[in-house]
Length: 280
Image (cartoon, rainbow, N blue to C red; front, side, top):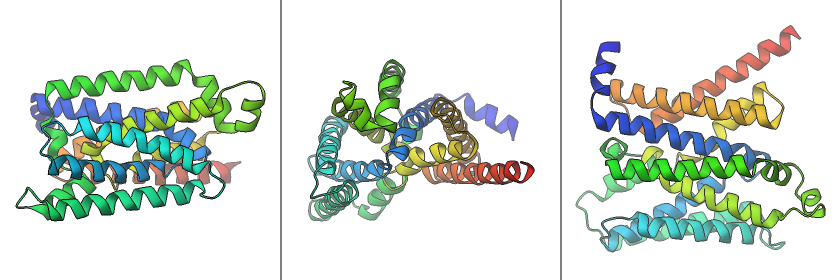
């Protein structure tokens, strides 16, 4: 198996997939802790459905690079979700459900009405659950992912204290002069960028797993925000790399394999917490 893996690693597309997969996992886990603690973790799910609708529109328009349309639409939707979620009449979970379901239904309707493919069900399935497109990345796409991932990491490091304040006590952060609404907006925009990057990796229906599983696993074992964030990032990168390797060796779908590894690792963390509690 090791010899087979080394043989595969000689191919650039395998190395590209590993690099992009682990970068996306890293970015998702960094902001995943904040989203889980703010009880807004399903924003990833909602934005992924919006991205699905945008991809459908891009395919109908025959755009050679759907990122031109998908990224701006997803970012705008993230801002709308944030603004709508703060509305007293429409709570955050209702806003996510409203926008995500509407976008997915609209996208699927367009794909049926203006289908440009002879295999519509296959296109929809690959968009929802991920596809082999992660293994057909070009060097340009890899560099775009690297640059965007670096921007996400730099943003998180530079504004770590502000993110921490907004996450745990937003009202207190506002009281001491922190521009909480601005940082919430930046977090929503960064999440939108991560969602668009992750579409090719795990598909629109499985993106939430990259956000939720690492954060929840880290919370089973640690308590401080910094420790949880660091462990979540390491956990997510390892699981993504392992999932991609297993997928390549076993011939299984990339996205679902990564999520399965995340779920198994979460189970191990829960078991470790039970053992630790029993000893205590």
